[in-house]
Figure 1 (cartoon, rainbow, N blue to C red):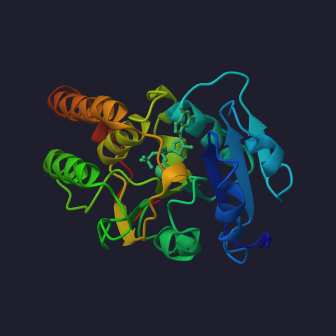
Figure 2 (cartoon, rainbow, N blue to C red):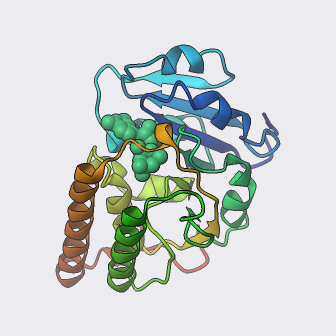
Length: 252
Ligand SMILES: Nc1nc2c(ncn2[C@@H]2O[C@H](COP(=O)(O)OP(=O)(O)O)[C@@H](O)[C@H]2O)c(=O)[nH]1
Ligand SMILES: [Mg+2]
């Protein structure tokens, strides 16, 4: 892995749950020249995720109890900041997203042009990658409402391939978010209210059995929780102008 102390430190975090069968493939695709350090947080997997992770050159953190996807990310970001990350990449260890695209994902943050990057499946052809049609339709529907609420024009908000600047993670209170899947959407709301800049790059997606555990029922809960974050966002905009704390344009 790259480790020049004069260069910004790029850390990849992987929130893992039952990722034993896909972890090695995912890890192998992480470009070593760009990434300084890799952290895997295991949320009490029922398979051999930890045993497999310990064979690889990465830092393993193990939860003592199962917290959920959002709770896992809280440990991921706490650990990455403690390790001195300047840029943090969140990558699912289920081999769903193409980790070879990490350089394109982090470039706008390293160049000071964005604070948060999304690897968008919808800038390409997610159906060709095997995304189920009902997930495609739900994503489109939620994304349209989110763009309207946030005043943005992003192609999707539901990707598991993202990157954040250190300043963003130090500014927003991600620890206050849900421990469940809606964590990702609550975080977007916080980022928008704090005035940080969000941009996106295309990323191909791969759908296969191990890459997707979220069934229809859990997706409905997730969709409704996402709508609730938009209602809260609108209410926050009417009452407390959080954007007063926003960093000045061009800063951060
Ligand atoms: N911590 C935790 N992570 C989970 C749980 N279920 C799924 N994940 C992780 O959350 C991510 C997204 O889940 P996934 O099933 O791939 O969702 P999908 O690809 O959108 O259908 C993956 O990295 C999983 O490892 C869980 O119950 N707890
Ligand atoms: Mg997945």
